[in-house]
Image (cartoon, rainbow, N blue to C red; front, side):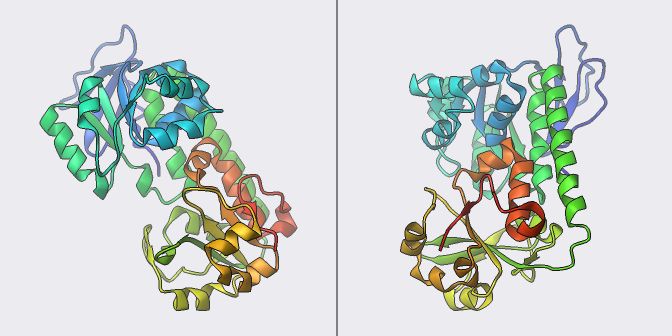
Length: 339
């Protein structure tokens, strides 16, 4: 689970790896352990390109301004930076002042800006959309790390990647990240202890609705689906394998989802907070059992940020939606759509 961190610190030189690469991070005065093939950095990093939001979560969790100062360019800059206006005001200020360059998108990176900031390293997700970017960065001679949080099959597996990023900024940051992870892990276990003796399994649907293509559902190994099952819900699409998802025809979706006890809609682009907004997306939702019973929820569009900054809070919200008789129904992030 989670970030591949070696606990052998080599006298102030921890080693970490991602996507087949090994990195050695030297604190001041530490000796290089001379690991064959390893890429060596001095902590903290001074210039990076961010293509992974978990780096921003690490900045928030550690409260280390060095992380924000090191970000010279960012992918999806105009959509991501404003989301962190409250949590990372210095990052937002840098963005508004034009001090962070736009590094483009996964499918269309801005290589001119990436080269311009002369980064020590570029952090990007490891998945199919970054294969060509990986090849281009190699061609340009720019060091990169493709991180694996996207493929994790649990909330905590994703969260553990904060430790990967923290190592690049020093031992103090790593210790803060470790403490944060352990606290979240304890809260996760507290939730599971409370559902241990529950014997009823409400049927739960988790999906996204495209205005043009209809319902998109995820497989049973997706981290949200697995958590739904762990807190004694029955994920309606447990028969679909894998961590990813795909579109489903409306008729099949309605047949399987219409009578579910709990429905959670993954919103994208903008939040849905009212019945009117929900039914304007699809008026057929009015016929869903969960909608009629007040158990239709919307997951905010900035959920990626929330899952990094407060994984325990998000996990608790799922438990509240599924078993309000145990946890209450005052969700913090999931938005209940009143009928």
